[in-house]
Amino acid sequence: MLQYQTRKEFSLLALTLSVLSRHIKTQIEKFHSQLMQLTVAKESRSVAMETDQMI
Image (cartoon, rainbow, N blue to C red; front, side):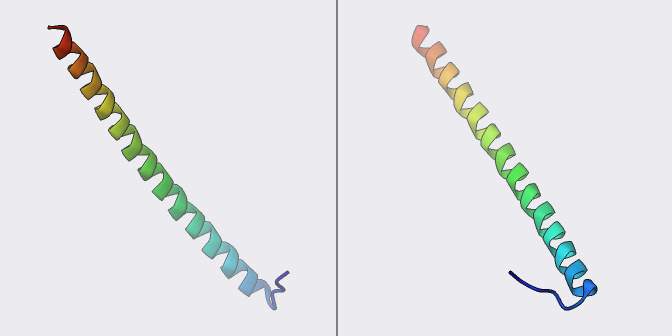
């Protein structure tokens, strides 16, 4: 396990981890949004193809 020499060093590391965590969360939310858009587009195309086949 790591040992920290100063409280300042520990605080800096904690802040860095917090910033990285927020960045990763933002990236995951962005990916999820893109995935949902692709899913909706795919479903829309499927419905359109089914409608065309019925006509």
